[in-house]
Image (cartoon, rainbow, N blue to C red; front, side, top):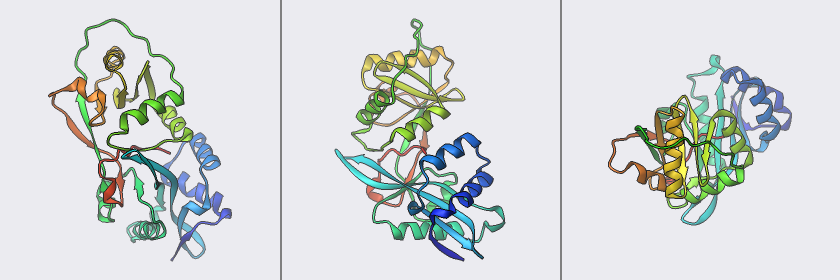
Length: 258
């Protein structure tokens, strides 16, 4: 078994591994590999010359205490079924941690596995039931990626967050419904607002009304953001978010992204 960085000509083999393991939509697969593929940031395990496991450690950054810092963000950690339970992915994670001098981050599919490999959960969201709102009809308005990112960066600045480039935002918007008001937005799937942010109190109230009108049942709130003030003293459930190899990233909001 050889653990090493990928080669440029591994493109099709890596694409096939991702397709088989994750049963991915062809459109997403084509988009990801055409935009994100970089052999310098992929670690593979080869057996008899064939890639049997791999992970992508995408270059990324996060904001913390008013500074922008580099990190890597793991996606596509995949092993063919016939090669699982042999410790291969653990070896890929160890290789990656050794190869980088910056924090490694990810959003886990199986949290205990990554905990056993030295990752800590950096933050939790608070999930609240959305109670009945009495108010008028509100229409969702279009917000550009730049406007969404401005709200996101402003509201997560105090505690810190993994930052998003345009591709990451495009991926989120293709997988979630967007409900937006001026100065606020929510990403919604299956009647759950998985990320709800507003930078003005009037926007927070309007956004909650908009979500209620569209039958959203629960809202996930990033602690210490303005949106949290709308749920003062109400019961909530903690939802663990992303993970890191670096304890100095405690408190950093890490969500799933590609």
